[in-house]
Length: 319
Image 1 (cartoon, rainbow, N blue to C red):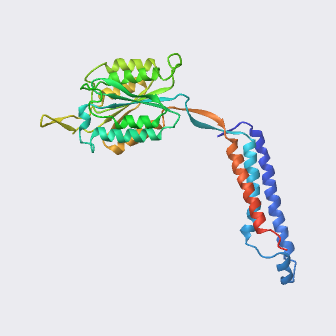
Image 2: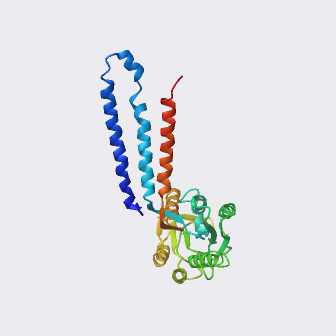
Image 3: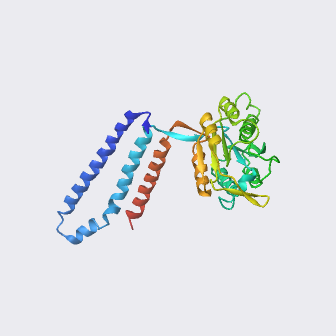
């Protein structure tokens, strides 16, 4: 935290001076009261009250002054605020291998559940879209702020959503970029700040080369955060026999490194949710210095009200 008008902090010396005067007056009051020899008269003139009741209003008043001085000095702090038009595209692999039960109940169901949580954690102002991909990619939900539509799209994610077998990571990236470019009328000339979050369990087997797609993402200044989901022991049943479908994140790691995104590995639903949480705190925000004097002034006003309330309750005169 910094101060835009640090010279005004010298006024705190006045608060310290008032505190010193108060302590001095309390000592003189105690010395004066001790001169009374008639204890009954002393009790009437200065009836006993709990010490904290006597000093709390004064302490709150001094706290109020200190807080108001701090606010007057115009404190400023780095504040994280959502970027205007921030857009996030979630691309989820719906290929057959995502039906592996190495992550319960299966990879795709776990991915849907984590995507729901991720969407709920994002600010309402964020534009969020959904892409499903297998051997090709398709936009299920265009980027927007309609969370109900987004959750409906996530729930509809299923094997064969694109109708083409395979894993087209490059197509998923390129389709997401196209969706970002159509966010609004200004998106072509003034692209919104955007990120792609891509989840898959395997290597690219179809469509556009992920390296070429990464080059397009770099040109568009859109980082791609990638998540490889599943274990090396995954299997799915084909024709009555179990086929090995180990998670393979090599292509995803290359994509993340080339585009300036992050690469993550998740082998459980809990780990996947944790990855989404980490991504959610880093996308779509900017840090700017803001005046936070209102915080100090607000607390100062609360302290003044508390001091006034305590004085009226504990020191009121009874007829």
